[in-house]
Length: 515
Image (cartoon, rainbow, N blue to C red):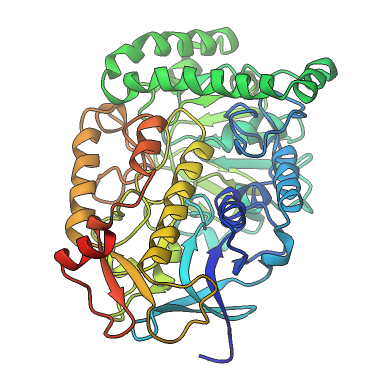
C-alpha cells in the first residue's frame, strides 16, 4: 500500500453510528482515530435522504443520543432537516471535526496478519488502523429493481435517497414505485404539485395516524431550564415501547386490536370500497414495519392519484407496465424501493487474512457475534450489524449499546497488551477474533427466538428477510435485553492473536490472560 497514516481506530461513516462511536472514543480518552466519510458532510442517511416530507417515525426525544439531549426539538416527530442539524451540532459540541476525513470512500480494507492491523484504501488517501469500526449503516445503499426497458425511459428517474431537487415535478405525470416508509411521506408531499400521480403498490402497508405536533416555546423552555424533564420524557417514550415488544416477539395475536385501529384510520380517509380493498394488507400488522402517517390515505383518495395494486414489471418508452397488465404514461419515476440491507455492500470491501471478503463469508447469510464481530475478521466491528434492527423503537438505543461493547473491546485490547497510541508495528500487539463457535451459538439463540415473532410468522415478505427467507435484520427482544448482552466483551468468545506469530492462543491461555 502507498504511504499512509496509522491510527488506533478507524471509524467508517459519519451518521448516528459513526458520530456516536467518535464521541464514545473521546469519552474513553482515545483521540488517535479518524472518521472516514465518503461524502462531504456528516449525517449519513439523514444527509442522503432529503426527499419532500422526509421525517422520522420515532419521537424526537427518543431518536437522539442519551448523552446529547436536545431540549429544542421543534416537533414531536422531527423532520430530516432538524435531525441533520442535530448531528452537525453533536459534531461541534464534542469536538469531532479534527477527526473527520471527508470525501474518503473506503474502496478496500485488508487485514495484515503479520502486523495485526487493517490497511485501508480510500478515495481520499490511505490509512492503517489497529481496529476498524464500520458504521456504514443498513440504509445507505439504495436498491433499484432490475426492470426490463428502464434504460429506454426518456424521462427522469431517481431513487428517493438520491432526490433530484433540480427537477421540477409540478405539472408532471409521476410514478412512485413502492409503499414503504419513504413512499408514504413522498406521496402526500408531491400529490398537490403533480398533474397525475401513479403509485405502484406491490404490497400494501399497515398505516396508523402520525401523532405529530409542534413543541411550543414554553415546553422547550421547561426542558432547557429543567433538564430532568427531557430525561423523563425520553424514559417514558422508551418504557412504552419496551412494553410493546412482547406482542411483536411472543404474542403476535395480540396485535389484532392494532389492526382494527389501522382499518378505522383508513376508512376515515378512503371512502371508495374498491380503493380500500387495494390498500388493505393480507398479513398480520407488524410483520412489515408499521408506518405512521395522517396524510397518506387522504392523498391516495384524491382524483389525480391512481393506485396500481401490482408491482412494476416493464418499461416501454414512457409507458410503465404493471404485473397485472395495467399501464401508465409518466414523465418521471421515483423509486422508493429501499436499500441493500441483508447484502451490505461494505462487506465486499473487507478482506480477511485468507483473502476472502466478508461478503464471501456471509454468502450463506449475515451473522455476527452480538451484532458486532464476524469470525475470521479480527479487530473489525460493525455498528447496526446483523439482528440489531428494531421494529417498534429507536435505533439510537441499539447503537449506544453497541458503543458500550466497542468501548469494552478496546479496554480488553489494552489489558491484553496493546499500548494506547501504538505506532502500528512491533511485538506485544494483540487482536481479538470472534470464535466461529461463539458466532454460531449467538446466531442460533437469536434465530430460535425469532421463530415465534410476528416478523417470521405474520405472513409477509419483508426487507427484514434475506434471500433464503431468514430474518437477519431484527433483534427479537427488548432494547434492555440487548443492552445487557453487550455490556461487556466475553473473552471466552474470542481467540486472542499476538503479533509474534499471529496464531490464536489456546482456551487455557485465554483464561490465564483474562485473569
